[in-house]
Amino acid sequence: MVGPLLVRYAARLLDGDWHKAEDVLQETAARARKHARFLRTRGEHVRPWLYTVVKNLVIDHHRARQIRPLELMPAEEPDTVWDGTDSTLTSQVVLAALRE
View 1 (tube, rainbow, N blue to C red):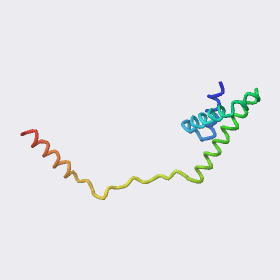
View 2 (spheres, rainbow, N blue to C red):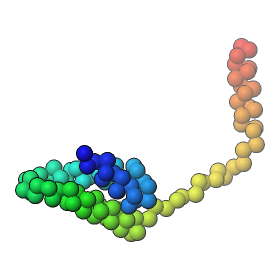
View 3 (cartoon, one colour):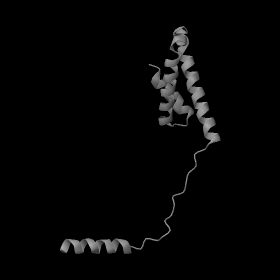
View 4 (cartoon, helix red, strand yellow):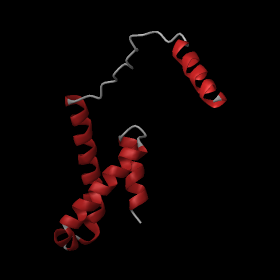
């Protein structure tokens, strides 16, 4: 079975990102299905074709990340400072409701 080997290869090219490597493997499988008629004529040359597809997909991924890098957005700070007043008032309202 070549699947686990392809995932390991993709993960190595993706700096250990196993989730992305699995995505690459799924896309490779989809392309293999799409080109099934061509691949049947290749016989034992299918394996190098699969590795080439994985490598090309990883290269495409790296290029896409260079064009549109992931930006880490800082968490927005609330405009008001929490002082516990709201919580205290809520607790008093709940206690009053329970007494009734």
